[in-house]
Length: 290
Image 1 (tube, rainbow, N blue to C red):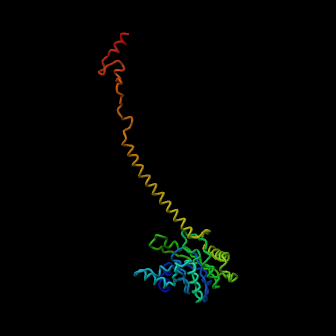
Image 2: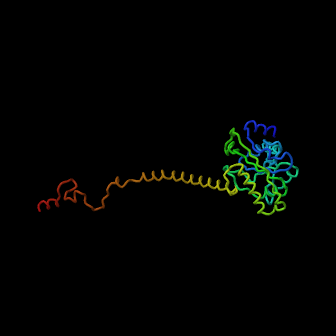
Image 3: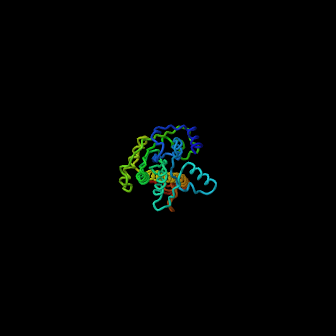
């Protein structure tokens, strides 16, 4: 994969890198990165000489058909490990076991503390369970990594990628041996995660949002749904207005209606003392005589 996909990425996109010297040549280490794009898991290993193992949902490895087999082969070749999320505690425990198995072999383990891709390019709060527990159980150093502009290469909904230079900044390793044996303390987990996220924030320069990215995605989806419903209601209202105007136009205006007189009411000529033919009547003659 490094010779094929990795070489192609470096040749076409020419990513720039800072801090390669912070990645140890041997031994276990955790690469904790922000997550802007699906391509993050390919650009980072492409610029390193060592193999980097990430975790991926098991569905990528079990999809049926020819496409499913090709997808599984691709992820295996890229060093991805399947994680079964159907357990009682979900992906968290599976990720921890997978990470520890990689580090026990003296390899590099890649993880995204945010838990999912950023929906808008901002940096979100790190989830404390996975990263901190793997770091404290293994004793491996945590190396903060910032991916730069990878979300601009292929935004959601865009098929053809944009040819541009993404960036990768690699920070100095963080040592959490002072917390050894306290991996089950939720306050320690929070402290370790926040320290790593702070270093990622300094490297990336992203705007930080103190909520989880999953919650932000729900908010964005709810807002989009509400906007779509409002637009639909507005379109329905605009459709009803012409129908109401047409119905109002078919009604006979009051000014155009012929005047209807009550039965027994004399005509205008009769009220003036004239018969309907305009000749003076008896009443008119009496008035003249008077």
